[in-house]
Image (cartoon, rainbow, N blue to C red; front, side, top):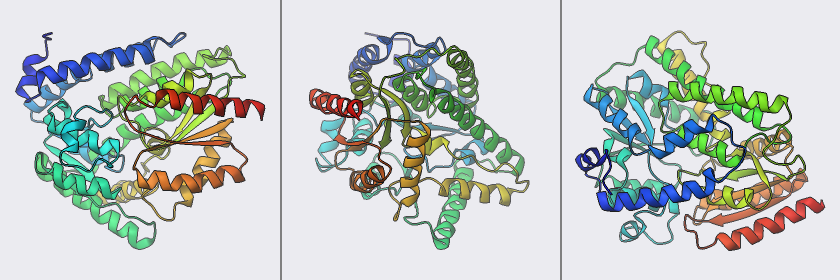
Length: 426
């Protein structure tokens, strides 16, 4: 079926037939998981619209910006400093990596026991299904795991990739390495955009990104109420859209939604009974449209009240210090802020363990569900340490490994339902 965006997608070399099939499946999936919910906030209508046009009007905006001279930087990870991109008058967007689309193409060149996220972003490129990837003037990778690191070498054969080196520890020498990488990235962005990053521009960019983080922090504070005033699925969607949408517009819309949420909290209205088991998700990021596990959890009689992940508090917990006046001071603040990210790539990673326990206690959860993509070694292995930390804090934990397929939904549902019954007994 033709759409108003076909000509734009064709110009981007998108496989129109395969892309049409993807959007049809995505639309049904979205309807079943999101639009079937009752008691949603009116402010979620904006998020529904964004998702309905995530490959349409947003791509059109990006193409219009490119025609006006702006460059587009695509990323897969929260370590890439968006402040630097915005300060160079460029657009930063998250790239497609949350579906099995293109899996067969990816497995022709990647081992089958590669994590789903890596196979996804390679598959989207090989199958010509992601208009964000095709809109990029620069794709930025990072060394958060060996799988990604080696996959970027292959991806680079099809689309140029700039890779940032992420330290694996948090000693003084590691901060020095990270500062070198931030400065190298700044130079690369200036080279790609042709724009010099100045102190006034960087100051404004820091403010814009911090404002978005503050809006999401406000959202997380409000959702912590008892009874839960918004579903975990809806908050996950909000966090996912934050990687695609215009940051200023997105911040404004989320502040409006939080105003509605505040009114709901004041009246004690919830989307589930106050006795409903409260869970926190922890672990791997969930890129659009990876909504399987949250749907299983919330359709099984629980509510998700927090996410300890890159699509959650790991991305929004810390602000960049805005007190600097010189370019050097602002860059130092960016270095410090991003070094606080507690990714499982770090060793040792007691910082993450402490943050999980602290957040679980703050949210008054009945249990933690630790989520790892199959073959994701950093998060899969670190689940052992997380479980020990949860036991010490006397917080029940369920560890789950899965991928993007729907084949294990019933198995997951059985395990989640058993976990819910267990925490109810406790």
